[in-house]
Length: 562
Image (cartoon, rainbow, N blue to C red; front, side, top):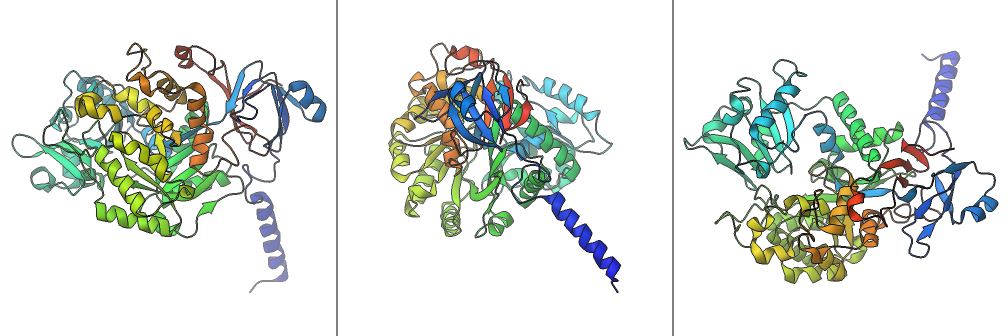
């Protein structure tokens, strides 16, 4: 039985708890007000065509209230404390329109294999990482790419077995579309896999000369072993997400479109937001399954605009690097192989209809020309409208006659410029001289009237958006190769590139009214750079340092001078 004293204590505790929780939409615990200040001594590129440049910006409670001349703003907002950009360049907060914070978090908990030039180098990195593992713990890694090795052929389990005869090893290819296992990992899943494994629809596995599984599993075949891999602990995933967010902020990101989340990911993002730990705005694309059903008619948004859930991510095919991209004609360097269609056309049409009925924005992964044709045909048959801002994630290899259809159907081309400069060394070998003309075709799509939204697809590519900006401007890698650019007719201009990484990306996530440009009424999401990327020679962009990153006026990386 509750006594009056007990009830009084309970009510007091509840009131204290409510005060600590603060109102919905606060980006930090409690009722702490957001920052207010006058930013001066800046070279501001606003992203607003009606006022493209300015020297000062007034911010109240995390929102922009005025942009313009420093003297005029100082007179109008004399009550605000002054913060100096020290003559540096300010741009809108950069938004990665297609990335994977979840995967980056897991990668930071695993062996980093990015940039390895041989199997021997991979073994060395794995052995170094193994020193941190408990006996029997799986050895995980990500980032290998056989295209970078002296012999660009897929590896085998035997390449790992000598160094790791007993510990299960499970390694993700750089693009996330192939896995490499040792014998111990395969046996941990099922002894029968070595002899009797059959690839499921949408997947492929390779065999050795004796008929046993080679250890490489492509796309949907990954689950044959992946289902046996122990998950990371919740505490480890929290630690990994903290590292991923800090990395994103360090490179000037204030927004990420998370391309594929389940309910556990969503709950982690919401908890981080409630705890004041989510330092980018997340436009989350749910995966088909429980998350799809949970948010079907009850989309999620917050007053602080930190998280929005109103879109779905659907896979159609694999990736070009692992020859899983679905092509209408066979691979030029692998006769008989047309790639993998991971979702059957009838199932895809059903998913699209269900997504539209739920009011979802559709975001479909399509890399090969066959997958892109199916996306266009299915969207058109479903009767989509431009108001839905439906997207093609990657739009990587297009039949030339399909390019005009993007604008006609109102489909956003969500693309990743560094894919072009990572793939250009071997992409034409895969596709041939004709098909390559419809690959990574940013200029052709933009000139046809399509909306572009740019990202990186990290951790497939590096987080740093300056690499993508440089790629889009030059069609060159970080060594400035090839001279003059790779198919340079597809290059973009600086304002077009910045727009695709800011307001274009915000528009593709229905957040263009609150972020993406530096205008009154929007959140003060901005980045301070050590050089003017709109003016310097393109190679200098690669060396750009982010001095500070601000989200709703709060520094999430670096700082400003008082």
